[in-house]
Length: 472
View 1 (tube, rainbow, N blue to C red):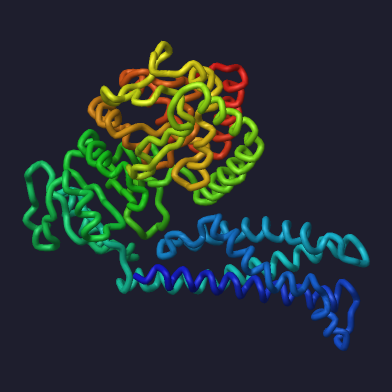
View 2 (tube, helix red, strand yellow):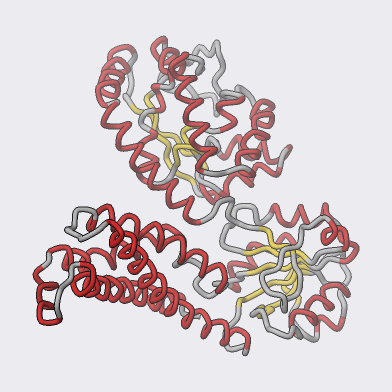
């Protein structure tokens, strides 16, 4: 599947429909709202707002759609959901256009404002969705007729796995699952399954199999519905947010409402969302990271400079300290801080700091109390290796110890680490692995309740803690 080509189709149509809607709307205003005549139609081309709209609006609309997540998963679009997304994006965009370009126009009555707003909204929404519907419907037709599909891995090797394959393959409306193979579970293999697809290995091999075969979906179909076994395998996928995980439900899941379906013709499966938030919230979160980090670096520049001078004058060694931490999807990165310890503080090996740690400089204690040492991490946020809010990143040395006792820690690597976190606010800094494990529950709660509103609350509490000097 050519994802770039499909994305380009949506982009080109969205830009063209924005341009066409704006052009038609402007002609309407000249002829109707402003009482123009057909022989005055050339006046449209002398209006600067017309040309500003022609040049800037297609780009602005496409940026808004990108923030909304329109250009992600372009082969998995649901037409009803796309109708809803297009409606809200059009409504928000048209409101902005009226405030930015049209509010100071000369009109006859305010009734014409309302009518103009409605006309522009209907033009833009109608044209945009019509093209999207055509592209999405053609894609859906190609999937339903088996000309397009998604590489899928079946986790399970017994009769349930065979029955699941048969049910998905014989659906009234084909859902697009192209099975590349199955993973053997419990040492048993239904021989009927081996005639349909190859045995690709064991659960421990699942990540390697996903990489090799470019798997997009993993479907669990395990006999006897072993929840513990399913959870253990899912933990192996914890770092991935690019693979959709589905589980065949039992009667209990159906009764308790765990099963949600997108099509009345498709087989009911429990879908585990790999992304904790909607795409538009990720876009807003990233935009807020950039804007607030820039503001912080600008407003705190006197504090930044003064802190750097004091660090340099009060103890020998560099001003900044860069340490390797593990971030999003388990990738290492360099986290920057003002140096708060004496040089060679870890010559005996990695060690966490404590309240009475002799390795901390006198000024380092003051910095930690008001979290001044973390100001350089705004640079990490600008680079995109960190976020303002997210689980605090740790070193691999300590992660290995935490995972031995709490494998669910790897779930935190589904999101970017942060300067502050729910665990930081509720628990504070950890002085040993036991406290790290204890703090973990708050970060897991954040993952389950991740939203823009939650981030705002955590940031406000963090500011309060800093002003009260309750850091370590």
